Length: 142
Image (cartoon, rainbow, N blue to C red; front, side):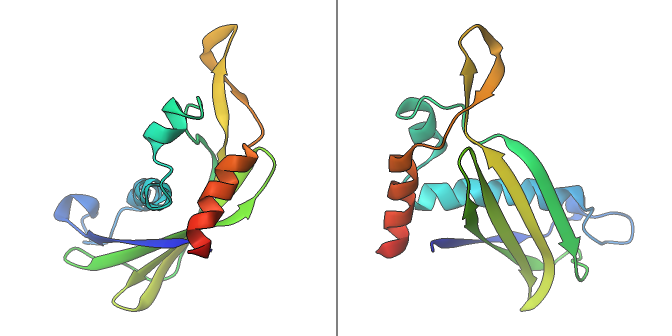
């Protein structure tokens, strides 16, 4: 299984008046971490858009469990991996550590989507291409 870790310095603007990270920032960081995970696998959003003709992997569900606070001045590490492949969706799991202490665990469910040919403002889900998953998993085997 391929995993990727990004480091994020916690800035003043990430925090509430108590100097604790305001929770929506974790969801932004999960999104960043997902992009970096797929980049590491050689399957950037540009590849998804240009080669696979998808609109990317839109988010359809997100969850977070907050275990310990993260504060202004901390540096966190977000480690991400695909924990489950489904027919049309995949689950990306995230673990946030703060100086070796688990701070947040989260998941995102993302769908393989294309523009609706009858109305490009709408999306349609499709099966995740087998070769896309195989390309992703082949990096993990290296």
